[in-house]
Image 1 (tube, rainbow, N blue to C red):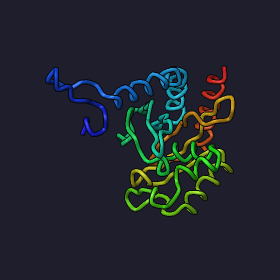
Image 2: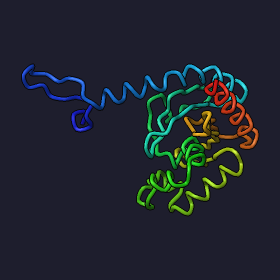
Image 3: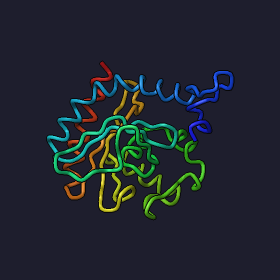
Length: 201
């Protein structure tokens, strides 16, 4: 598995395995995200304190989101999200928030047909029309929302972190079992705006 993914290569002369290009790419990606993690960590800690819910930050990688910060709230149940976990972007509030902030042509390139729309628990957008409707709602509202797309009984709201060109570099989200989505979204939008301001310098 690791060999097939390019994380290790066989070195027959040395009779051992070494790190492959995949491991290098993963390490390089981590180093590129480290400044963003450093900037956002305090903001996410405060977000958890303000909402008493689990919060996370994710970045887009192809059609997936990769979680780079995970802040757990005391007493809240565990989630599938954790640092290093990948999930389909179109099923997560974080991914939808980032996709909504991308140019339409880029979204079309990522999702050329409905075959790109994997689903979990028979939930989430089942067609490009449904995906576009979710993205339009996220643009209109200033935040994205998913209800049970990843884990039944859990919902998330997320807002994009934008660089100086308006490009989404990440998204900040809160996941909850019960709560006022609008109120939580207000906190999330403020947190994303703070991180956006910090990365713009």
